[in-house]
Structures are given as C-alpha cells and as structure tokens.
Image (cartoon, rainbow, N blue to C red; front, side):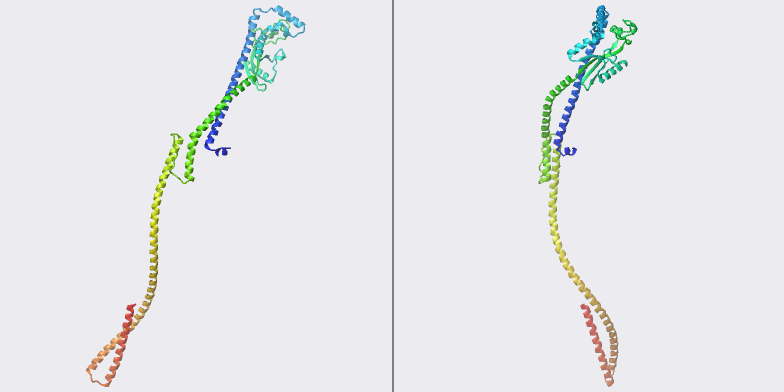
Length: 440
C-alpha cells in the first residue's frame, strides 16, 4: 500500500494527504462535538431529574414540617377511614391517610410532574414495604448499592448513570428517614408503636431505624432515544453544510496547488527532460515568480544551467584548439614517418656497408697478416740482399782493382749479377704488395 502510494505524483500525494487530514479532522471534530453535545444533553436531563427529585424531597419536608406539625389534617377522620379500609380488606394505599405520609406526598407530586414530561419517576429501595419498589434490574440494584455506599461514606446524595442495554439515563436521590420529617412514627423504635404492638398505623412492623438512615431513593428513568434523535438531526444538519463546504475547500485547494505548485514543477521537469532527452538546448530557462521555495528553485536551476552552458562553451573552444593541434601533430607525424622511412633506408644501407666493411676489414686483416708475413720474408730477403749488395760492392771494388783479372773473376761476376736481379725482383714484389695494402 505504501509502495503504491509512493509511486503517485507528488501533487497527487499532497492532495490525498490533505483530503485525508481534512476528512479526519472533520470526523474527529464531529465525534468530539457530538460526544460533547450528547454529554450536554444528558447533563440537561440530569439537571431536570435533579429538579424533580429535589421537588419531591422538598414536598416531603413541607408535608412533615408544615402540614403535620400544624395539624392541617384531621387525624381522627383519617384514622377512621383507615379502619374502614382495613376492615374491608382493601389495600392500605386506598386509605386517605396513606396520601398524607410525607414521603408519599413527595413522590406523588413529583410523579405527576414527571408523567407530564414523559419521564418515569418512582421509589427504589432494598427494604421496601411494597415489593414493587424493589430494584427491578441488576443495573438499578448496582446503582442503588453504589449510592448507599456513597452516602454512608459521607459523599454526595445523588448518582446518575446510563444503562447501555436499555439506552436509559437513571438518576437517584437518597431518601433519609428523619424525625423532622415524621418518618420515625412508622420506621422508628417499635416501643413507640401507636398501636402498642410494635407496628405503625398501617400495620407494618417498625424497623427501628436511626435518625438519618438512608431508606431507598427517588429514582428517575429518562430514555435517551430523544437525545439520540436530536443528536442525529444535528449531525445530519451539520453534514448538510459541512460536506459542500469541505468539498469546495478541497477543490479550491487542488486548483491553487496545481497553479502554485504543479505548474512550476512541471515546467522545471520539462526543462530537465528536454536537456536530458532532447538536443540539450541549454539556452532555455525556467520562468521564476516570487521569492518562495519554488521561485528560488527555478532561479538556482537557471543559474546551474547557465554555469553548465558556460562550461560547455569553454570546453568547446578548448576542443577546437585541441583539434587544430591534433591536425598539426598528425602532419608532423607524417613528416616524421617519412623521415623515419628515409632513416630506415639509410640505416639499411649503412648496415649493408658495415657488413661489407666488416668483410673488407676481415679481408684486410687477412691480407695484412699475409703482407706482414711477406714483409718479414722481404725483410729477411732484403737483409740478405743487402748483405749480397755489400758483398757485391766489395767484389766490384775488387773488380775495379783488377780489371783485367782472370777468367775466374768474370765467371764469379756473372753469378753476382744473377743474385742482384733476384733481389730487385723481390723488392718489386714487396712494393706491389705494399701498394695493394695501401689501396685496401
């Protein structure tokens, strides 16, 4: 339920909450007001019952203190009438003297007034001489018990309570037997019996109650159906006006909410959706009205969009610069690539030349070794040739000294000439090897 409610729009949720609160407030107000109204109506009935019972009590006191004490009644005639009733076996209530009993005077006068008002007035007592005055239900029995305990404890002499089963308000006022009210003539010490047999003039045994003893209560029963009907009429009349007024107020609230809250929020949502799903037009702004929360939200939203717009423009300019720099870098890269290709070709050529040079160096080294060996040989030959030359010079000196030597000297000179030719050939070979080595 809560998840479903949370999925509704914010405006719908606010309206739902407001309607719920309004209905709850009206309902609680009616419950409290109706309860208070019902209590007031019941209190009015209690006051009315109190007036009736007070009238009965005052009538009892008036009959005892004014009429009996002042001999307003012809006692002889009343006693004679009572004797005739008893002799005829009729009910003692038919005797005229019974209607002069103070407590009877009180309840009879109050009962006639209650009958005119549609109320039930009676006497209720635990020790009633008339069984009809005994508590007629567990509710009245409990109520009279509570009143008795209340009076004996020194509390109030009245009590009232609602019987939920019969929907009736019960009101009781305690009745006390007192000497001033003449009650002790019938309920006092049996030794004071007017007939000398412990009974009163009506023939009932005297109870020997003490002065001030509580003997039952004036009891008023008031049905609450008229009060309920009055309350229902009041509620119906109130709802007849409350419902249209509440409905009009809720409608006005919905209209104002949509105008003051729904429209600005929807405009803000449309702008955000356009930025998120559309072409991202950051030039659009939200119309701001007033300085309330929604107005401030729209203002700061516009400021935020403007800031984003400025940032994007800055980024766009930087992107253009980066693109231009990238183009230049790409061109430079192409040139570097071409240069690298050329360098690669040159490196390849150098590598080949190095390889050739390496081979030549090896060959030169080999030929140098050979030349060194030849040089050593040539050196040895040259040394030998030099010796031979020295020897030849010496021989030539000898020849010059003996030009006309013998045939043996001519033959020896021929051998020396052959040796000189070999030496010269060797020197030529050395010269050729030296030239070749220089070329390499």
